[in-house]
Amino acid sequence: MNWGRTGNRIGAAFWVLLIALTTTVAQAHRLRPAIATVDFDSAGGYTVSLQLNLEAVVVGIGPEHGDTNESPKAPEYDALRQLPPAELRARFEAFAPRLLAGITTSFDGAPGALELVDVEIPPVEDISVERLSVVKLAGAVPAGAMNFTWRFAEQFGECALRVAQNGEVIRSEWLTSGAQSESFPLDPAAVGTRSSWQVFQDYTVLGYTHILPKGLDHILFVLGIFLLSLHWRPLLFQVTSFTVAHSITLALSLYGFISLPASIVEPLIALSICYVAVENIVTEELKPWRIYVVFMFGLLHGMGFAGVLTELGLPRDEFVTALIAFNVGVELGQLSVIALAFLTIGFWFRNKPWYRSRIEIPASAAIALVGAYWTIERIWF
Image (cartoon, rainbow, N blue to C red; front, top):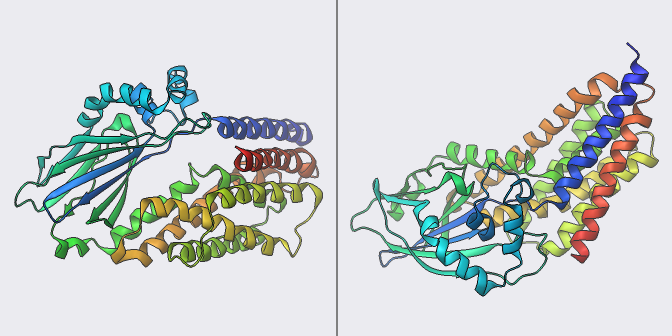
């Protein structure tokens, strides 16, 4: 086999695929899961605050689409994105019965009743970024009810459930499309019955899925680390350094010791992707300072992860367990990215004389362009 010609084709294909993938995702209207906060008060009532992409739900763009541009209903969605809040509210009020029919709250197995209270719709801003509205619902807890479950209809996609009592989040759970939550005990004395292992499993999955398939910026950063050196030992050192760093700032952010607005953190994360990729182009071998650079950028990415867990919330009785599990999931996701890249490219071509010119440099250039695009987008748009 002519490995030089094959490598040339694979390198070109890899470059084109990477540019196509990253450019598409960078410009797409990505769909975020809904966040449902169910709050039980001491007077026997409960409220639901449902944060979601209202336009996507109204037009019927479901979880089968990674972003709205993939749907044939994308033009209708884009039209709704341009409506001022009052007009979108009118469209939603006609749709509201279907949304309510897709929400199932159960008490001891019997369905509960919910009514629409209000909907908060932000003003029109950048239509290339999804607008997140908040639908507010309310209901009464049946007398003597002991347990509560939640289900969000499959056509509405994934849902992060936060269960609270008198405003304080007690439990968080990540639900796949159409899945029913675990049973939540309404007796405050029984809230802590959920095992540490269950919490660990849930937050490990959450951390993993935050990398694969949802964390494109983190995936590109890890690929940037991978491309310069395809040997396992330095790769593991760099990824571990990255994990230790983001674990530190994630914990400090969640405990309230440090805080930076997303308007600062997100552009810096994009810039870190660009930097690592550019370094791959100008440096032919791994330098000793690389692990320290990766560590510093890991501190930034940790503050980005904190935004996810702040929205979802951590269970107060298993805070440390959930925090550790999330980091374990992130580490497993990063290692999966490296393993897939190694099996696809590294295992076959790492010792080829043309690896750098045909794979490393073109792929790094594509990553650098996307990182630069995101940096500009997140600063000015």
